[in-house]
Image (cartoon, rainbow over all chains, first blue to last red; front, side, top):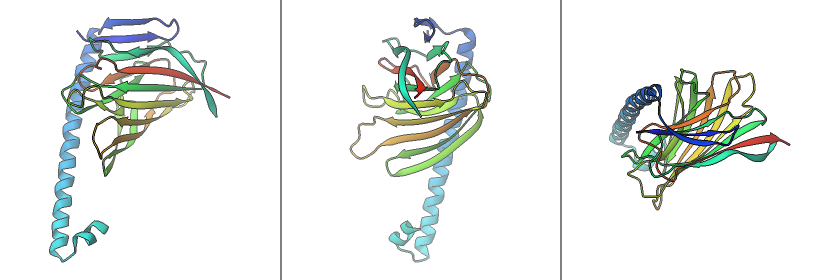
Amino acid sequence: MATAIEVNCATGEVTERELTAAEIAQREADAAAYAIAKAAEEAAAAAAATAKASAQAKLAALGLTAAEIAAL
Amino acid sequence: MANTYIQIGSTVTVGSGGAATIDFTSIPATYTDLVVKISGRTTEAANFTTLSLTFNGNTSANYSRKMIQGYNSSVASSGGSSETSLNLGYINGNNSTASTFGNMEVYVPNYTSANNKSVSIDAAQEINQATQAVLWLNAGLWAQTTAINQITLTPAGGNLAQYSTATLYGILKS
């Protein structure tokens, strides 16, 4: 069972308790949203890398050297 | 300029069973700023996982952020708005080298003001490599005007692993 550690800053008391049903539901929703966002970020990064490689290949085909491409 | 650090409550050190969240409640309104120091690792089977923060238990779409992320020689930026928590940056996952952690500092100025709250975060991971490093620099916003009295830390995946720590400080103006 997942637990929460709570520090009551007014009393200094530290308690560890099981998550409530609402907290578990929120946690599951957050995890689902995170998975979607992470997949989107990875897809965007892969697309950017593909576009960069394509652009570099086209520049090379035009006669630019690797140093010239890197300097852009 | 604030110049005094006073620890509020106890440092939380996660035990062997892990923890889904670390929650600082009933934060007194007697300081100028707040600082949270975190050393975190999760049980998720990944190299890293983001750690999120909410204020006052608020999980409505009131959080925005703009961040710069560096990984070895690569630098990227990203952002978000109307999010339900504030993404602080990476902490280490269970696939990373044993006993390594992601470390970060969250600075919350004027946490009792009647304005929307801005936050700065810097984070670096221990990645145990010879030539690489990971960092996050992050500006966050909580679009609420109520005083902050609660800070909750939650990893996006898994539980906070044993020996993760979090410490809250109050800052007083000089």
